[in-house]
Length: 330
Image 1 (cartoon, helix red, strand yellow):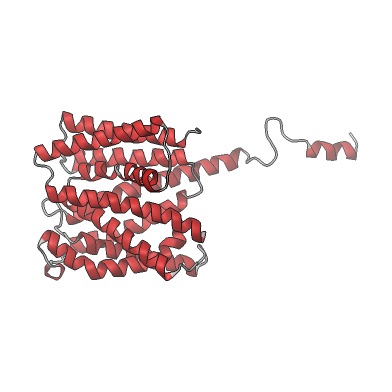
Image 2 (tube, helix red, strand yellow):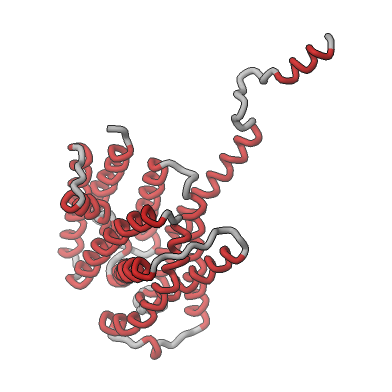
């Protein structure tokens, strides 16, 4: 074999391997990284629910019933982390107009504050199931004000979710597991969270911002808003003033752990952005929902009878079918 033949053989691609595609080792490395990102996101998102419940619950936890103030601490922690990432060049800083920053921060603060209050007052199961109404609410808003149309299978899926949540709500009310205040706060959390999602997408498209850039601009403002309003709102809901809380070592450690986990949730979301498809994100959401429901039953003594279980299953199946049909090509 001459020199020309040697060079030609060197350029010949390996059988079964396409140029430009990762080799076996690179593919395995990517799969490991993807699996790690998935596990990180699911575990941190589920953990934050139970850490907060353990911290806030006056019956089985430490009785830190200041849910809105806790949100402000989470946002200050996120802001500090993001500023450090910007300083080291991990993410690029981008300015938002003051009007957009304030408008989004107010809505997002109402969203996360009402979600934490819902977690404080309601059971973990009802809190998680009520959150499934956020997507149906967004769909209604887009249909009424944005003239968006939905195919019959998507509409059927949304109605299935609503039916499941209704069954769980009626069951919890009849069993004394929920009260009117809890229902009102859960409803507020659905509306504000839905509006936050709509505003977030609109502002990101308008300003061409990543989610982390947007959070970097809004987290300090949200933290300040919730720190000013939070103690008074917590006083109205819980009847207790935050300065009267006896902070012991265990409660302080759990409070710090809650702030740390909230940072991990944001980092895990950042790791997943651009890595997975819309379908994978849907599966992630359903996995977290099921895990929260199961762990609430196993570890926090959430009462689940046959009717509540049927309602939960109906709501989760509705969300799964919604994810499938909304992601499928028309």
